[in-house]
Image 1 (cartoon, helix red, strand yellow):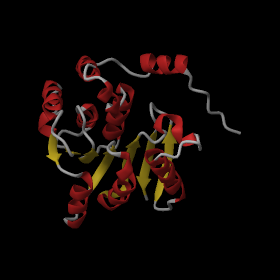
Image 2: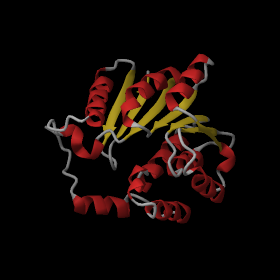
Image 3: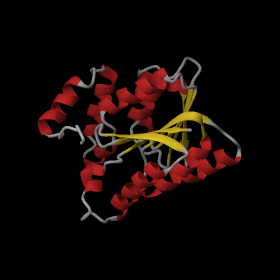
Image 4: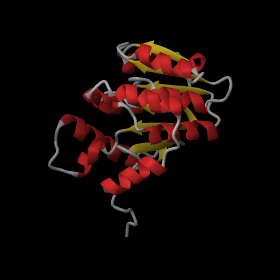
Length: 218
């Protein structure tokens, strides 16, 4: 019998208030992103960023990869968690919000740890596989229809015992509603099932914000 509690609006507000320690730079980035309008929904939650920073820090990750940058909050948090000589390669197919991201990376003093690549994620990852690049940590938060490809390529790029974290894996709760059969929902639903059956990894599906798949390569 599951002991999972129901996460309602009151509990969400509690988690947002008590599950995240306010940071001036992050709060300013969140506020500036929110001012962009509906597109701001692509930004991770601050409590997710805090979680990424802790995971990168406790795993002592040196080489990190991010697929999907947007305004740079996840990049900033991952970079904050890196060891002194650590590096993050951040891939996005657009430079539209890069200057905004770079402003806050510099403000946080982590800009030297981040290399930004503007290109198609699948193409860059395949090139990295071909060149035998390896990473300790990979974060995926990009176009959902390519999630299966990002997952498979990540398994070729991640070191043994390395971690892959994928965002939006509960997809606003739609994955649990079988009446939802749009492409993005079914892609994420199918990937959740694939990860569950995948003997190459250990995993946990966490109900943090819009859902994080926490994956360790065996």
